Length: 221
Image (cartoon, rainbow, N blue to C red; front, side):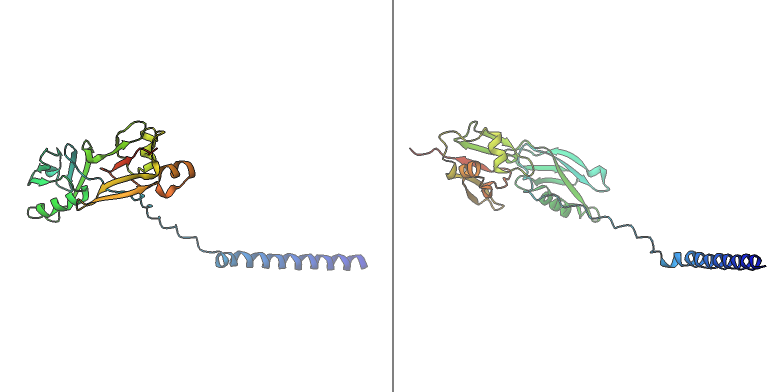
């Protein structure tokens, strides 16, 4: 009899434990949606990083430029810059291109085209840079004095490597970079090229611009 009562009590305890476990499990299932964090919204696409800054190309005689007029393929052409420094395109005749950057020429052409089409948008691309304004000229005490084709982001160090570096007779710390600003005024930038090459004085590794002239004088003995 005692064994029977014990068996009954054990059975009742097991049933109670099973019921409790069922309640706990049911509560956890119901709570899951409440406690779960909502799915994270996709991160907004970051804007593209700005391209490193550099001097914009200056159009010169002999260059070939592509004129693209948005939504007007009949006005989009590729033309050479004539020796007189001008170009001619449909509806825009004899506009001066030499001495202007592509964006400056594009804005000027938009003003002319606005008399014919509504809100014109012009893009200018230099497809073949043959002008002297597309080069850096290196003269003086370097291994190979010459003109060097300009590339976006080019620095004085890049130019020096292109011409073989300084000679044994170079006064590198008296070198200078000569350029003209937008108004045609000549600007001189003094450079310490020997200190840059031998001591790592990188503040002299300045960015060059199309049309610059790098002058390296001879040392005085």
